[in-house]
Image (cartoon, rainbow, N blue to C red):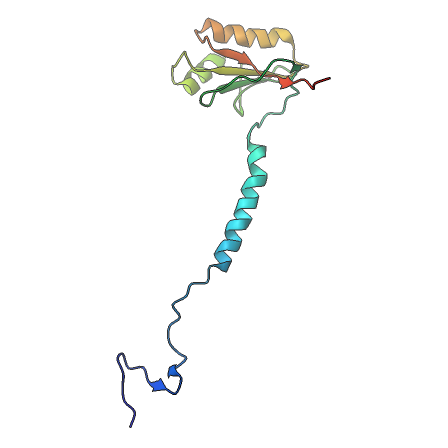
Length: 147
């Protein structure tokens, strides 16, 4: 004389039988994946700051405050030029910077010149940018260690 309850589940001595649905979500695998992703991003983030390796000169100048993301032109020891991480030539420098700055002559530009690069090449880049009307040009160096 079995009696049917609700949705057809039979009631035994200990309540509903064991074949019922489980309403709990197991979040342990999701937490494990999120922690692994967090560690990957923490390790990879410092590597993404600068893609072109240069040996910057050291100065005693203090760091400048920046407002927004500046455009960076890199001069390597062999005279190769990079806009961000993209290789450019001296002929395409102004057009590439104009595209990156979206025509804004008030955009802040930084020049990263290797310590062993020829001074004349760095000054040619700076002069070309200044002659094109960009007024906010800075040179990037590393901080000299305190004596």
